[in-house]
Image 1 (tube, rainbow, N blue to C red):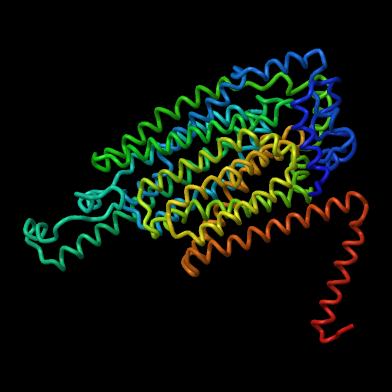
Image 2: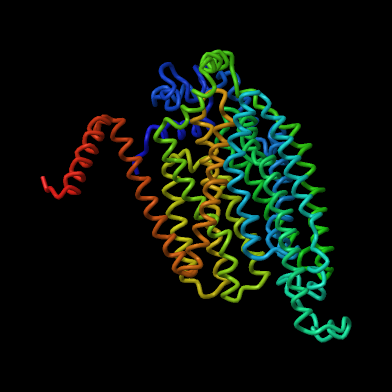
Length: 548
């Protein structure tokens, strides 16, 4: 498997964490003299010297510190991921069922849930740019975390209407279906069946519309104000790791997977209790607020690593930052390698939301119970933890493009396995692949975003990657996946997604090979452009009825 120069640079960066530094830093990652596009792609012969940030005198001390089982400097990062995801895991897997309990129809539920990714797509890079421009990234991170907690808590105050409560009397909280005797209601109110049904239906529709508008507005505003929370958490995690230990990002992020898994299991235990529905959801929101609030405290103690900067690095960084802010920002999108990578993670995000939105529906059609659905979430987290732990070494071995190939093929394997599934319990083994399709992908996305970030735009770069994945990709995938599911059914949709995954892998591989050949001088850009022009002229001749 051939790798591009960007892969070699990123791999060299991650391998350097296992070696002792022998010389002073000669410059920051991805910075060298020349144009700004060259700054985004440093040469191979400079990468080893560029990526070292401490002298050989400090190397033994650094090695000793890494051997410690518990690094106190990184403890706040681990705590933030664990606490934040623990609180989110208590409530977010059950929001769809909660909205149904409040009185939303299936279509209204889908619209409310679909608002998040599209708002996230706009808000996350916007807040990242504001933070980089004003130099207030930490303030925005802490405030966005607070907004995330506050606006999620507000959702818990939007309880069901009186009409919905009447329908839910004696309900089963899992299915939230009406279970009352029409004859008893008729005897109580002495109404005809027709008039009663008409009145209840009118009141129900009015209540649904009212609750739908309230929830849609709260979700939209809350998502806009809280969108950069996780993207900026990744930014500060990378800062805390410093230049020497960027490959250890996965070892910090895995605590988020542990927290999410424990939160989902605990939340499911509360939701499956015998208490009334409104009491259950109130308990879940209270647990969420109590746990997640501790994450704000942890955020105050996250500090950048001492290896993050050096006098030489600061001097060169200041020189680069003399470029206009917008010009530095546009430089991110002027690199074909970056655009191709963003397209790849956009496609992979669509695959992920297809599974998130519709896998449980498919399993329920196969006869799966709530216990199995809860276990499937636990197995996805079990798959994430070890992959996050070894992600740095994997990326160092095969580079970012190699990881993207593997993730595409892992999604193809998941979709094919789903399409032939007959026993729902087999899904537990399939869900272990989530460690590859999400944990490995997100680890390389975070490292690559940091790697290609121009000076002073580290938060913006991570925000763009986050917006493409969590916003644009999941939003488009939710819509397209729903259309395919209704038109072609579950198994055909999964098989079609598997074909798309294999095709995506082939296309991304072909692009990487083309870029590598152009970089080695085997193919010139002018030759490619000339070939495209000749192809266009031929197409015009054919359209005009000519064959020459």
